[in-house]
Image (cartoon, rainbow, N blue to C red; front, side, top):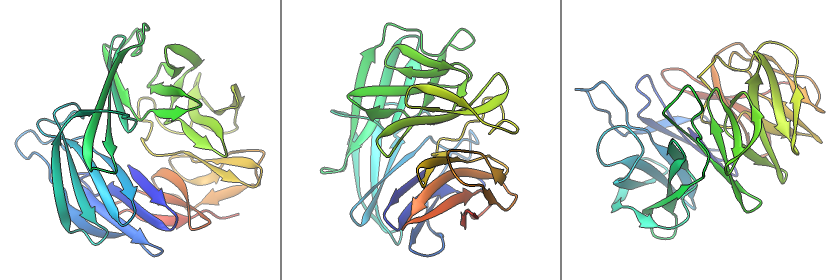
Length: 273
C-alpha cells in the first residue's frame, strides 16, 4: 500500500507488513511500527492517506479485516502519532471495499476531521464471482461511479462488468480510468473502455494482484509494472525497464517515474528508459 502527494511518499512494508515508511524527496525511511497480532500471526488490513503534512492510517479496531468498527491514526511524516479516532461516520468512503454476494461495505477517511467513514450498498450483482463467497480490494471513484476489482473475476463499474479476468487496482491516469490485469493468462490494460493486450508473461501471479497502482503515465502512453521488474510493457509508451526484484507499485514522485521494491525495508527504484 502506497500514497503519493508531489514528492512526498508514505507506504507500508517490512516482513510483517506493519512498518510505516515515508519519504520527502529522498529515500524511504522507516518511521513507525503499526503493530500486528502475534497470537493469530496476522497483520490487520490497512490503508493510507496523505493530507498536508500528515499520514492517516485506516485500520480495524478488532481483527484483521478492514471492516467497522474502524480506527484512524494520524502520524507526522517523521512517525510521531498525533491522534486517534474510532467509529464509522456515514460519508464518502473510497479507500477499500469488502463484498459478500451483492452487498458492499466501503471504508475511508474524512481528511478534514481525521475520522473513519463507512458506506454500504447493494449492487444487485454477485460481485465476488462464482468461485468466491466474498472479495475485497481498492475501489476507484471516477466519473460519478465506483469501479471494483474482483480478483480472478473482473473489473466492475457498479454492478456492470467491464472485463473478465484478474484485475489489479483501477486508477485514474490523465482523466482516464485504467486498470492493469491478466486475462486468459496473458497481460493487458483496460483503457478508455477497451481491453488492450500486452506482450510477455502475466503481470503478477493468479490471485496476487497488488493493492498499489500498476499503471503510470509516460508521454502520451502508459507504462505497466510487472511484478518481477525487467522489461516493462507499455501502451503507446517508449521501452522501459527496472532492475530485477519484486515490485508492488509504480508511481510518479516529484516528476520522476518510480517503482516500489519490496524487501525487509522497501525502497523506491527509478524506472529506466
